[in-house]
Each structure stands twice: as C-alpha cells, then as structure tokens.
Length: 471
Image (cartoon, rainbow, N blue to C red):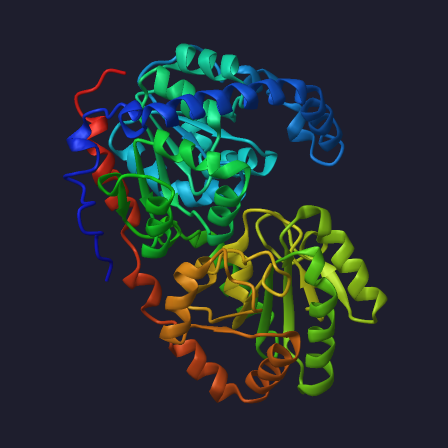
C-alpha cells in the first residue's frame, strides 16, 4: 500500500490552498541567480526561435498535425477563457497519464485547457476526449513556446486558476510567468529520474535546480522520486507521494471485446508474444529473438509487434519480410472496427500500424516484451499490459520506469533480463512449457488493482485550489 511522506500530507501542501510565493523559497543571492539565468535563457531561446520554426516545418512532412494550430505556439489557445485548469501533457505518454485526472476534474465540473508540445499528444487528446472537445469542456491545442511574452499572453488571455504539468517537464518561462501572474503550478505524476537529476546538478553549476522551486507543489509517484525533488531544493511540505496515475487509466472495453472475438473466430493455434513500444535501436536484437522463437519452439508463437513510432511501422514490417518472416500490418488485415478482412489468416507477425489501440493488441497476447529496454532508453509503459493481466518481460534498461518496475519484479509479474541472450533463452523456455507461462501469468493477478487510486489522491490534494475560486 502507498504511504504518504512524513510531513508532506495533503493538509500541509500549500497550507490548504493558500498560495505560497516562490520568492520566499530563495535567498537574495539565489533570486539574483535565478533572474539572471532566466534572462540569459530568454535571449538564447529567442535567438534560436527561427531554428525551432524550421524544425516544426520539416516535421510537418511526416506528421502534418504539426502544421496546424500555429497560433497556439504564440499564446492563443482559442477564445478568451477564465478559471479553467491548465494541463500541459507534452506528448503521448504524458497525455495518457493525465487522462484519469482530467476525467476526475471534469466530473467535479472543471473545464480544462489541455496543451501539448507534440503532434502525438494532440492526437491522443482528440482520441480520448472527442465529446468534451466538441462541447467546449476541453480546449485542446499546442502549448506556447517557452517565450516570456507568449506565456504572458497565454496566462492573461486564458487566466487559468491553476496549472498542472505532467511528469517531468521544467519550462522556465512557463513557471516564471505563472509566478508573476500568481497562478499556482503543480507537477503531477512527478517523474524526476536519476539521469535528469544528475544532468541538472552537474550542468552550469546546478542553476537549473533553482527552477523546481517555482512549482507550488509536486505530486509524485514514488519515494525515490520524492527524494530527488527534495534534493533539488523543493520544501518537504510541498512534495507528496500519491502513486502512479497510469494505474488509473480506463481500459477500452470495445478493444478488449474485439480481441476476444477475433481470437474466438480465428484461433492462433498457440500462444501469442507481444512486442510493444520497440524503438529502432533495439530492432535488430528483437529480429534475432523472433528468429530464435521460430527455430526453437514448435509451433512457434504468433507475434504481435507494435513499434513505438509510427515512422517505424512499415520499416519493421518490411525488415521482417526481408528476413523471410511473414509479416503483415493490421491495416491490411482488419477493418476500422477490427473486423477481419475476407480471407483473413494469421501471419507469423501482425504489425500494429495504428495508434490508440494498445488494449486491442495487448488483449491478443499471452506475454509482452516492453521496449526501449534493450537499448539504454529507460523503458516504456509496463502498466498497460499488467492492467490486462499480461506478464511483462524487458531488457536491462529500466531507469525510466523503476517505479513500478521494481515492485512488479518483486511481485513476480515482470522479469528483467540483462542481455538479449538471457531474454531469448527464457522466452524459449516459457513458450516450450505452457505450465511455466501460466504460472508467470498467475502472478500478475491483483498487482494492478493494488496500485490504483493515484488520480483520486491527486485531485484530493488539488481540491483546496479548486474550491471557492473564480480564477
């Protein structure tokens, strides 16, 4: 069970909704250093603004959504608003993590300004909240560039009552301009990694650490992350452990049912191995894993492979076929509602070339490898497969998902392997011995349910800032 950090309970964070002036957290010399650094940062970011614009323009070639809503980048999300909750969820993962809190805020009657820095985040918001966006409960768009005047315009035009930044973002202008506008800013699902802390501590005399104190409060997922925020200078009474929001994500029942229907109508003839959120740097190793399963397991498991990036969908499919492994994309085998096309037959590898359908893909699988772990990227979301009682395997790199990975390993719901060889050998063993795979699966039961509730705890902490305010 989750335990709250001593001295950092909801009753202490922000003194029950009373705004804490961040200036009180700095010595005189630290204030001068903060302002000087901010001034230099603004000079540099303005100098590089043409480069940012060119990069965005180039990205529109592959992701046209980057070319839309350009006015958002300069401070205007839409018509003038007042008193909404401002949420910044940078990309796809952060948007999914924020979804349970957004649902809880909507249920309280709050309206939302939902912003992103990536096209993937914006697309996910449109998938997750189509009705709320259509009715105006949610105004969705891109976050302004981190320019002092763009953020000043944004806060003046929309005047949110508070801001919620998801996971690990630290944008100086966003925080400085909120301070001067007296808008309380919180980081939710705080995910300050060890790598991030060492980077901030070692560069430029650790000056970046000063900006963390501009947050009114930090609501984080694990004790080790809470300790990093404290080491960065956040007061103990402003850091609270609430748990991982991703455990509260709603499952997509239509996708789960569609997977069950497909398996009933077209049995795979054996177990299914999922490869999820793989990245380019580990694909060669995973090709070898698939080849080993084909050579050493009879009959070999079917594979459902969903690369992390849409740009890798076709590349992975083509590479598998070039190796003599029959692969086909979901888009050619199944219709929009997951109905099998005429003459459907399972390929050796079904490549998931769609976004927002992970519950469907996971529901097809008996065991899931989660990517960015055979390459030193720190790992991607292990919670989604565990929520569907699918056991998880990873490579050695899990520094970005230590919570809840260590807890899942301890519970027996996840296994981490130090190299490709060990991973391959155990996968072969598991798929040769169905009883061992079933025993592994049994250990996932209950793990997800035991870790739910972070969204409710988060909103409970924020409640004093939401009650009796008019923005």
